[in-house]
Amino acid sequence: MNQRIKTKKRLQKQWPFYIMIIPGMIYLLINNYGPMAGIFIAFKKIDYGLGIFKSPWVGLENFEYLFKTDAAFTMTRNTILYNVAFIVLGTVLGIAVGIMLSELRSKAKTKFFQTVILLPYLLSWVICAYIGYAFLSKESGLLNSLLTNLGFQAVDWYNDPGKWPVILIVVNIWKGIGYTSIIYMSTIIGIDKSLYEAARVDGATKWQEIRLITLPLLKSTIIMLTIMNIGRIFYSDFGLFYQIPLNSGTLYPTTQTIDTYVYRALMQQNQIGMSSAAGVYQSLVGFILVLAANMIVRKLSPDDAMF
Image 1 (cartoon, rainbow, N blue to C red):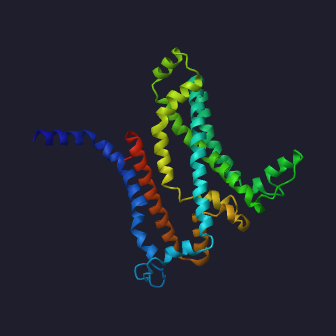
Image 2 (cartoon, rainbow, N blue to C red; image 1 turned 180 degrees about the vertical axis):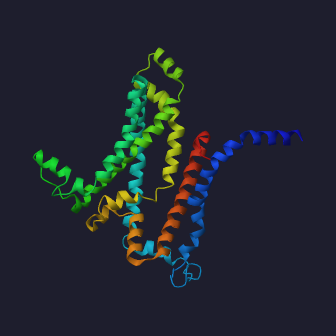
């Protein structure tokens, strides 16, 4: 009886917090769990005259088109390799910028710091908004204007697939490094400052402080973000791979991913079932990869596993 009374009092005391999470829970249910009810569409050939529920079942036929197409290897390879590069470079550069920002915070005035800390995130989106035809056009692009003014030849970027892996990696890193660095910087700010003071008393250099204190204490954050990114390794940023290359067919060998291929197939063939099958395939593989990555982490370092 006493336990029940204590539980009731605790609920009465904390009810404002439960009310606060209701909007987030509603959004999560509608945006993340609600669409799961439509998984069956992946196994149907949608006939708009019959409707979704009365359309004929086709089993795994919608999945077969992903693997039978000539572009299956190319789009799968591009999706995986780009994401691996994004994860590795994004993590390394995000940590580096996060450490630099934390050092700036410890030395700069508050107002100045508040301005500087927003720049990486704001500039990343501003710059990406202008990358595209206005930036890479051979005739009037800003980049080619800069090259010609420096005495170099203009480059026809949209007819040279070989240069696009570098372009896409640079754009993605620039777009996301502001957000990633803030996450790492927030973790660094939470590290006990007495650890650094003790290290300096023992004569540690700045690099030794980073290597022996900062990086080990960032391990949990790095692992968590990496596992989350691994779960989306079969997904790609549609805007990055479709809009920036301007859907140029010449660039498909190095810019086509699973998402862009499915979009093109949907627009050309109007097959919702095929698009849904691709989404189920990506989600299933991502779920398996998250479980596998977490299992490996749990065996190597149980305290750092997500679950």
